Length: 455
Image (tube, rainbow, N blue to C red):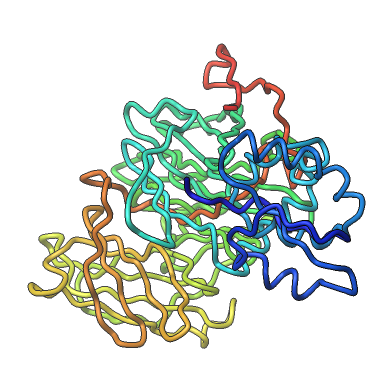
């Protein structure tokens, strides 16, 4: 039977029930041990021995031990393990469900770059562990995905989902809890007709401890063969559980549906502003989730006269980046450039990280290439690349080399909206609230069905 570490406890007694997987907690015990004698309790995977032993000792040791030691050890575990161990006793459940521990666990995962995954989007959703990149596991989202489902953004372990019907929900794929969003009404401006969802973004407001979703639609009108547009935008607050219309939102022209990138408390897109019939040059458009103001960031001085260029914002490591895909008229790429803004908001800090030129022997011909994840190593950093939604490449930043990556169980094709996601305990009731296992009522597009979170 595979041995499984459950917990490490500092006790006054010299009893050792079992010493299993000491490598995980030896550092923590060494850092915190005092004049007290140290003993390590760990248990086999067998449920009877595990639960029986823990229930006898857990309540007593929770009282005797310094709380910070217990928190430090537990915060190193995966969400899957924590959800299992919270069933041991009330003391452990109260600790793991608490907002302070949820934030500590999330912060540790971000700091150590652990518990990360990639969500592949398309007709279905798939989870790929970033640490191994060995296989893809199909997810079971709470929205109808028969005709496809999009991820509008990823933040603190939560995903913003939207399907082809327009249904929306916040979902934590690690805890499988979700909240359906009410559909806000859209008032069509006088003289305008058809509207299309053009922009969506999901991020976190740390000042108000609130996760927010922005949605923008474009209304169009034609007069004398001339097109006119108006952009309407609204923000949904997970804490307030309401939509709010954004007044005087600038008119943005976006060629296709895009998802915003959350960085420095703001959502970012590449867009073209339009006022009447006068078009402005492209820029990185940003919506601040704290101040709820709009601003623009200049694009880098990328290569010109190299075909038709489409730009996309991504986050790599600790930088806001822009990817430029340069294509010929036959839609085949001739060059891809990745630029990083090393100092946020400063145009002069744009730095080209690397570029990729299609090669028959290495990459093969492709239509687009988008970075999916950034891996920091002790010797070198690597970037996982999505190629046409059909295959993966791993780029070595130091060696400037590219190699193919095979992930078992992947769908034959996936979208360019695939995102990185960290496993967390963050709930869907707003902020770092305690985990709620009670049933919650949701709302669908017609407000006729009731949605219940998964156990």
